[in-house]
Length: 224
Image 1 (cartoon, rainbow, N blue to C red):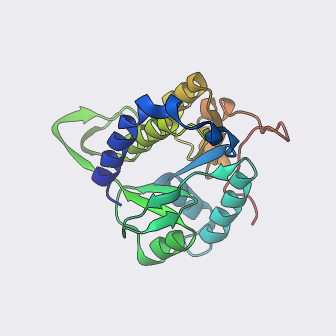
Image 2 (spheres, one colour; image 1 turned 180 degrees about the vertical axis):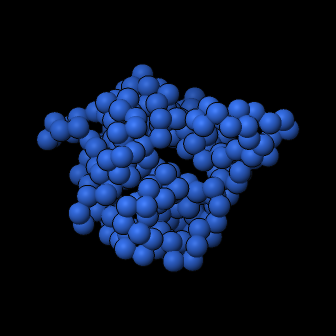
């Protein structure tokens, strides 16, 4: 799925916003759902640096993540149309700036993820990158697309009560703050301990599991 198509879907979701309160009473009987979003490069690259590209066992790690997230609630995404025009039983959404290599794409499709390609954007004028201080003319659009999608989905889908974000990027701090205002619980799946060591604010904002009362943080670098 291309990011342009996704933004069209986001626009459609926003048109449903006025009708959110008019949903039939039986919707309240639906189990609370989890919106699972993966920032692909933010988890794939750090894990490859730790374990090596061939020994990363990414399929096993994502399978374990899905199982953990399902312990919070049903995963939202069932019935979503995938990039082939078929109804998908998706476990979540993967956002990547470029087309994935064949093995990764096949693996994600088999796990049921919907892949969203977010092309880099060329700027009209150079600007300073807030992270490294360098001038840039091409920018990544993954973060903005994930944020837009999360905001639109949680606004329009009343059964989504938890956002589970697979990333450790501090750029998502404003998103987590907005989720708190909306009463949406926040779960986090960082790639490595090093990634959250550089950014403690995001994990500190995570909510507690409704049953275990533990912080809803799943480390993707743990043994699988």
